[in-house]
Image 1 (cartoon, rainbow, N blue to C red):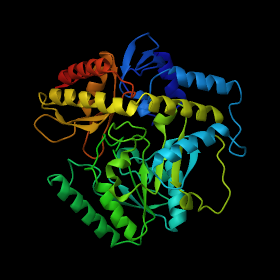
Image 2: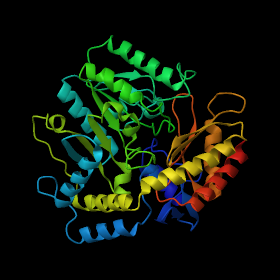
Image 3: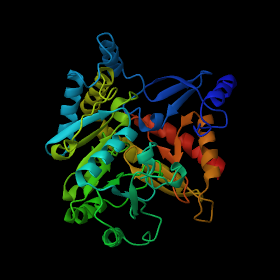
Length: 427
């Protein structure tokens, strides 16, 4: 393992982050568990950054991929592609967007790039509204609409980005307000911002901010924003890369918690739909999707083998009501963790919904972020046989918990017990 780490450092970028003091090589998985190169078994509560959505080595997906690989793996979008059409049909219907068109990419970053291209072309402006504490990918344009300094290595940008309040409920200038007044204050801030600039192309927002520590506004904020945006024809892009496919339990898409003013104009997705295969994509109304006046293709977006994986994975998700399981098991897990947090001065908040849970850590007796303890808890959880993530934005540190949606009650209890011990060791 030390040899592999040394080789990694020799040929890969210094900025390519690795978890743990002694980095982990995961060799295989099954269900909600993975094994490392030393044969240690772990309960996986992070799923390759919310990507293993249903289960590791899910037989239905494995079979679909194997059968498709035996026929043809790839042909590009220059040829008709039956699995791509079939998955696009299902996603268009599930999206809630009328007259929807779907374009497949290989990642969430590329999906958000495409959404920005569509919005700026359709609206003929390069001004974008984004949320503070947001994260939308690692490409040049996606980094430049990311409102999280830790994940934005440059201020250079092809876009003019203006940042809006509201993505973080319990910090910032409006934190002490009740939900109704919080939404009203954020709407007033948006109106004021729009009074100082030419009409932007779009607002892009994660319904629950992922890298930012699983923070979110009160339900209905983006519906209230949309009323204001529609007055000037500004589009709403819902970044569902982490919140889509039922992970929040209560809704299939995160935007549905803010759906009082209708669906978004553009929706981006990735991660969980492929269960580890490289699938991303964009859903948009046809008039927006078709606004480009030059040719385009995708060499690897929508390739037959990834589409086969996506179809099998989505079918399994729907047939086994994994959204309902996320709601039930996630609700139990959140309550269990809140009971633990009540006894620990270093846990500021347990938040989230479904199987998308954030545990914000602070230095005891203060409201200051405690990244050192977050790293210590990550290490202790690993020692106990549990893999979790971490994140956070401005002055915050949070643990990120996002198991596969097939998590059982017994596994939730096991993971909560390991995490409790890890938290107690840090505080």
